[in-house]
Length: 237
Image (cartoon, rainbow, N blue to C red):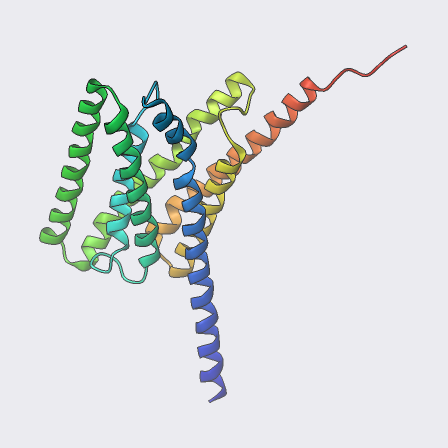
């Protein structure tokens, strides 16, 4: 009787930790999703997309849709918090893309429309193939590998920013709060995947956590260096 009670208490503690890790990942991801809002305030105020590119938002939309599909019960059991965060992410990307369609010039609108149609066509094909050609276990494997590839490429994109920071010796283009949110989101979903023993969640987010640490170390080094270089010289006699 005591052993069964202890087992249920351990199980409930495990469930709480798993749920907490997933919720934390959702919250930190939300910080990333709302981070472009100042950019789009500027676009709305100036009624022009200026030199801003819509490609990152289109690609992020595809990533969110693939990961959203992976998190649904028809593909994976017990990872619904992956579906919730990516559904919210997809909504934000659609809102941002709609502003590019509203305030962009004709050439940019045409390009974004073409890419958007391509994203929905690819996602529709993925859904159709996964439902028609695979059973549940094979479907999870198929979509899981797609989500891993998509997430790794997304986590690797800050490497270009790191390269820019190293070349310019300035952290101007790598805001600290975004780097920190990316790391915290990755580490939260890494823990979530480990607790669920889900290879397709903890592997890409583990890589994201490592890249997040590198990003924070680069920020700390060049931020300290820029402060030292800008500090006033000591008075000498």
